[in-house]
Image 1 (cartoon, rainbow, N blue to C red):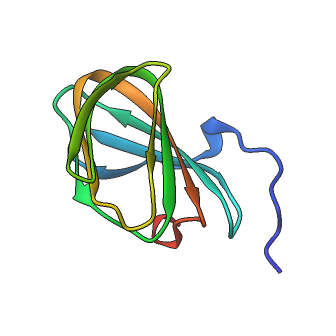
Image 2: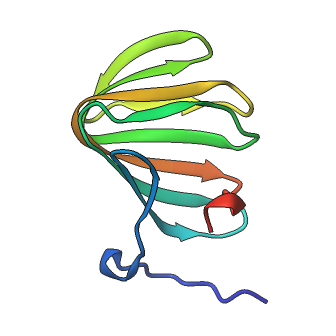
Image 3: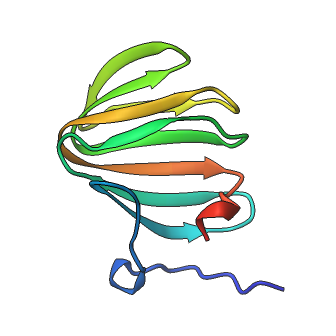
Length: 111
């Protein structure tokens, strides 16, 4: 059985680089839930994609243009974006920033 880790310390988490100008840290997860910290440089793109997981992105800092299901909106620190299962979505970073992405269930392809 997988050990449950109740605490996650950012300095212990290995960064990955899923695309140019984007850094991901998988902070904590179980089979049902995952939280990731995403750093975007200005101009970096989260390419359009879809997946079976539900996702919420909380904007910690910066400004992003999100497209979700064909609708575009600009979001900034304090805003959140919900992506239901299998909806096409993506983002462009307009001002360098940080997102917190929450998934259910967890993204097995991230670990």
